[in-house]
Image (cartoon, rainbow, N blue to C red):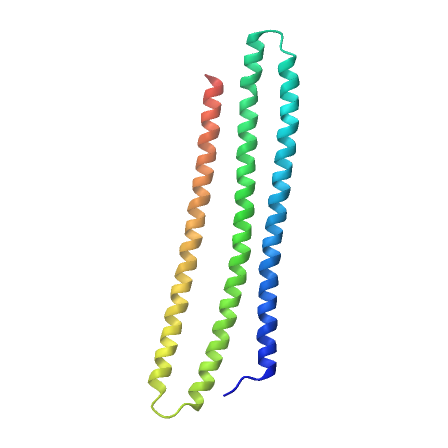
Length: 180
């Protein structure tokens, strides 16, 4: 059994397509991060100018302190929104990269199974035990990979739930402080 130039060309094409898919996913995530960060900086700058103007217009100390206290809640809300946006972009990028990896592993498995089938057809008598052992190892590896993916998805769901719970806690604390 030998490798043909067409097989090498096909493998190279697949590898380049995979690399481009990963690069596109990373660039899209970077672009989203840049847009989120630029928007946050612009908003923070505009808010600081507006807050400074409002503070300069305060007529007495009580109004000055009241204005400062009123700036906290919107700032907390914006920080929470920024954090959630960054988390969503990271989650999307991770999901896209996982899809690329899963697709690549699936293609590799199919190629390996095809190769194993061809080798087992041409294998000498008595080698069926070795072929069965390799098939068993491949099945165990696939099972482990599937379990790892399930654990990663569960960890992502737990992290998302924790982020949501922390967000609500911070909002609740800010509202309680404002009410006090």
